[in-house]
Amino acid sequence: MGRLDGKVAIVTGAAKGIGRAIAVEMAKEGAKVVINYNSSEAAAQEVADEIAKFGGTTMVIQANVSVADEARGMVKKVLDNWGRVDVLVNNAGITRDKSLRKMTDEDWVSVVDNNLNGVYYCTTAVMNPMIEQKFGRIINISSYVGQGGNFGQANYGASKGGIIAFTKTAALELARYNITVNSLAPGFTLTDMLSKVPDQVQDQIKARIPMGRFGMPEEMAKAVVFLAADADYITGQQINVNGGVYM
Image (cartoon, rainbow, N blue to C red):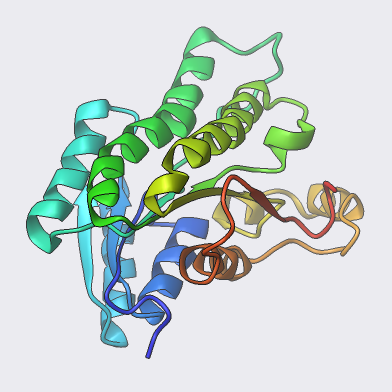
């Protein structure tokens, strides 16, 4: 018996990286998983195929969560087909890294729209169904950059710091309905994006991490499953899974 048997979970940005690992881990624990993607259709289908191999149930939905109608339309489709949403993982995120001197307005707006506004659109879409069923678990993927900052990531850091602040207010407002809202703040995690960084730069990054290594997507996923399945009395918190890079 899985820890999430009978639950319906939406994972945004689930085609790759941390989102993919979260979707797979939740399916292994028995949840029906919505695999959301924006442009990586083939990769999203690969996640669904992987989950199908061990008997999991998925729904693949294209939606750009930075667009209000698309985010809310995704949730409506899930409700129309599966009747409920128990877990929302707001994972979708992008980067447009540049120093402030070189950053354009478009660089700023696109990151904030996707990373922060998408969390708002998806959360408000699932909020009322969760209130009606008197149960919900919302997990927002932030970043240690939203806590400690990082050179060339003012837009990303602002969006991720905003997620932490949003999480606290949403938790206060929704606690009375048995809805918990928490954020996960990963450190440097070995995804496709990081693996393309030159070895010398990777070594420099590792030197900043007390545990001396990068995190794995599966380690982030296990923390998310804990918040979804076992953390009934935890809300409004940020869980740092970062090897000690920010304490």
